[in-house]
Amino acid sequence: ASCASHRLAHRRCAIHMEAAPGRDLSFRVREALLDAEEQPYTVWSEPGSDRPLRANLDLLVFRGRTLARRGDKDGARATYLRCVALDPLDGRGWLALGRLSERDGDPDAAIAMIERGLAHNAGNAYLLQAAGAIQERRGSTDEALDLYARALRSDPRHAPSWVSASLLLQRRRKEGAARRCLDLA
Image (tube, rainbow, N blue to C red; front, side, top):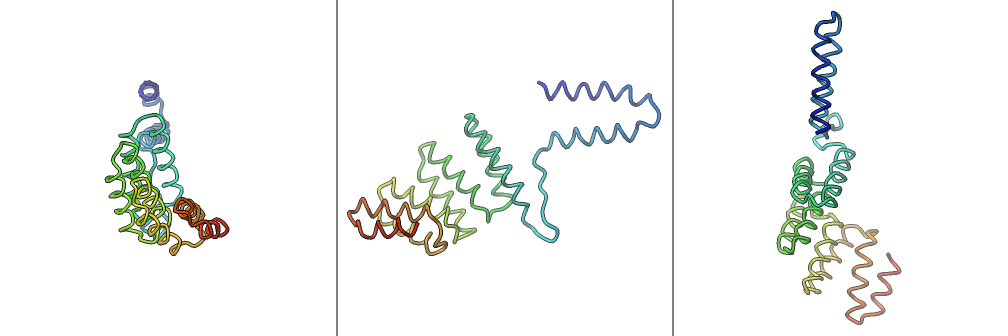
């Protein structure tokens, strides 16, 4: 309602501005600002690059997370899908879509979404670790350990993968290997 009243006030102001000579440029600038206000998160990219700026994706991911916290899962899903459409190589959109699916009680859809992200970027340690965590919750500990190992091969400094592998090994009663994983984390 406040956005509509804001536009109405500008349109009322425009009637007075049309009467005043020399204000045409100011009126067009205000209309352009109103149009920009209605189209948030314009995508900017580096010159000569197809990928959007990381800041654009940061803003979209933040918006999606905020919408999800407020309970607007459809809005969050649409925002994350826009992230994925803008840059399929960035794993944050895929990961967020997978988490939304898992929270909805559909781990198969979550795994499918993360695998779609891995199809675009097979070496993304965050996606591999998340897939491992989902498999571990489903009871597929061998597959989870394999995914953690793949994540560690792709990024040896990825601490969440080391910790997840350590906890899984600890549950399997392999205390020595678990301790080494925690030391490397």
